[in-house]
Structures are given as C-alpha cells and as structure tokens.
Length: 358
Image (tube, rainbow, N blue to C red; front, side, top):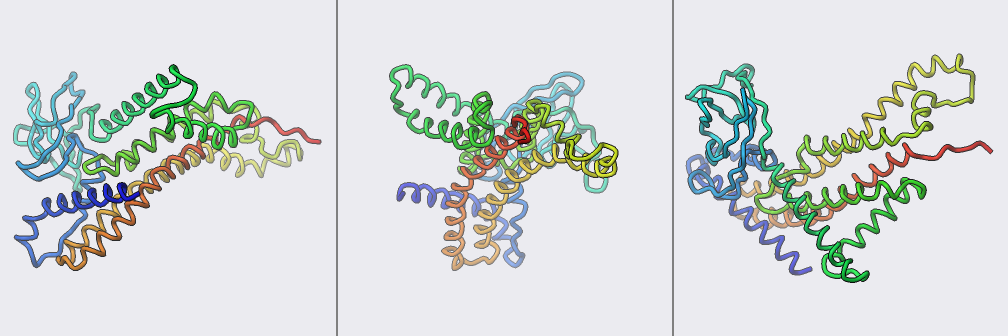
C-alpha cells in the first residue's frame, strides 16, 4: 500500500510542476490579476489532434497523431503541421486547414476564420483522425489483447492459472457469476458473458489510463460513452423476446378489455417506448459525468495554489487532491462495474422468460 501511495504522490507532484510551468509566465506578467484555471482544465479534459505530454511552446513535448480528412478526396497528414499548440495553418495538397476548439476548418492561406455568434462558419471536412482519445482507446485495446493472449497461453500449459491469468480469472468469474448470471438468468446468460467481460475490462482499463499524467480523458468523452450506450441499446432490443415487446405495447396484458385500455395506453405506451432510449442515455451520462467530475475536482484543488498565489495553501491543496485521487482509483472500478451491471440488467429484462399465472 505504501508503494501505491508513493506513486500517487509522485503523480500529483509531476502534475503540480506541469501546472506551474504552464502558467509561470502568466503569474509573472499579471500578479495582480486573478488566475483563471478554466482554460487549462478544459484543455486537459477535452480531445485533441496531438498528444501533449508536458511543457509549453517550443519546449513542449508530445506525440503527433495522424490527421485523416475527407475533403474532395482523402487527405492524410501528421498533426505536427498544426504545431504543438495547434495554432498553425496546415497546407495539404493546396488546401489549408486550421484547428479551432479541437475542430478542423477549411481556411485560406492566412488561416482566417469567419465568425458568427462566436462560432466559425467555415466549411468543415469530414474528420476521421486518430485523436488523443482514439489513440488511448487503441492503447487500451492492445493492452487487453496482450492480457487475453497471455492468459490463454497460461491455460494451454496448465489448468491452474499462472501469471496474469491469476488476476484475470477472478474478474471473469465475478462478471459471469455475479453480474451476468444474477441479472440475465441461468438460461441465456452464457452468450452475453464475453461482451460483458470485455465491456467491464475495457472501461476499467481506460479509467485507470485516464488517471496517469498526460493521459486522455477517454471515458469522460461524451462521444465515447454514447457509443457504448448505443451498443447496449442494440444488444438489448435485438435480444428482446415477444414478452419484452408485448410489455411495451400491451403492458396491462389481459387484465381488462382492450377498449378500456385505449385511453390509458395513449400515455402509458409512449412512456414505455421512451424507456428504450432513456435507459442507455442514463448509462451514457453516468459514466461521462462521474469521470469528468473527478478530473475537474483534482485540477481545481491544485489550481487553488495559483488562485490564492500562496504556498501556504499547498498542504491543504495536495492533501485534498490526494484524497480525491485515491477515491478516483476506486471510482474507476466502480463505474466499470455499474455500467456492466446495468447493461446485464437491461439484457435480462429483454430476454426474461414469461411468467405464467398460477
């Protein structure tokens, strides 16, 4: 446990130095002005076309990612053309592009953006780029593939797990017995176990990666959580049995004549159908909000040092940040569990066996 605390303390120390380095010039030139941490926080939790690690300006260190655009043909180039701060105009095959708030717009050679109500009106090419969030998703997928193949190799040698398989087997058994079996039922749970295990591990790994210095806030990206929610929406409704759909369109069953149910169904049936959308929507918002909030709170607590412009607040700031960071490690696993458990619960309601009246 002491080793884990040391790693967490080192992370906060590195983050503080990075935070201080980022705004050192601002503090020197505008001591009387109150420091505004919002731009830095929003930059940290938002996506980008390059993977910034540390430093600012010419001293910044990062990874250039591939930009893939469809604009009268396919255009592929490195995000290095935009510069480390994404302030440059990129020229590709006679076309010019500029990044504004993490979106790419077509511009002229000077990079002029025509603004209306604070938003550019320039044309936007179709963007299929490997952004920081996408790159971290690929990294998480590679990690899971390595773990999966290593675990499979372990079982080929012996039925007794060894190495990484000792860590993975309890997780798989937990998802199978305590999530899938309990919520879906013993008849059909097995076919959904691979998806639920993958879902749990993928979210958990991404949550942990998001807590590392310089990492992307993947699970705090609304587009990512929306895709996971759409997967749940499709699986639940494509798996739905006759009783599931009858509950949607005829929830009162044969308890009363249909003529007597028409007025009730004018309200009840739309509400039941709305539940098809609201369930995965709740999944999407829950994961996105919880992971984003954790990042914002940690950075806001560290920003107190620069807002108050005194080192006296440092022990309180770092102490609270350390507490929230440890909490975030627990939340990383908890949110993966909740998302997977609710997905299994929704699947279970769709494939539930009909209840016979006695």
